[in-house]
Amino acid sequence: MHTAIPAVVFVGIVVGLAVAAALGLAIAPGSGADALVLSGGVLLYTATGFAIGKWRAMLLALVTVVVAVPFGDPDADGLPTWAYVLIDTVVLWGPLMLAGIALRKLVVAARRRRSRPSRGPLTTT
Image (cartoon, rainbow, N blue to C red; front, side):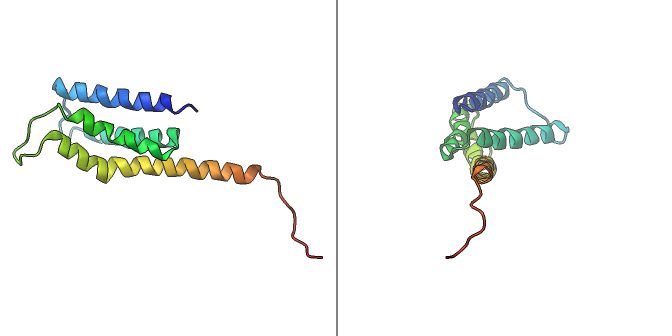
């Protein structure tokens, strides 16, 4: 699979969500939709990591931080929106993308191992 396609899809979804948030399309906590968005994020990051399957895909996780920089003013704690996104990326989204990448590498290694011809029993002469 070409790695550019999942990367473009990932960036498109992240930018689309950022624009929706900037337009005020927020999800009320406890509405049930918040769990759906969290599940979608888990799927998005893990599937992107699996689809790309290369360690450099981790750089995509940082796209969310870059996209968040122009959005949102500092909150009551004085932290800008991008700081919260960075924390979420380091604690949750980044490890999920790493899990997807690692899973892909394990699948590829298992396929290679199965496709190798068997050498048969070892004998000594």
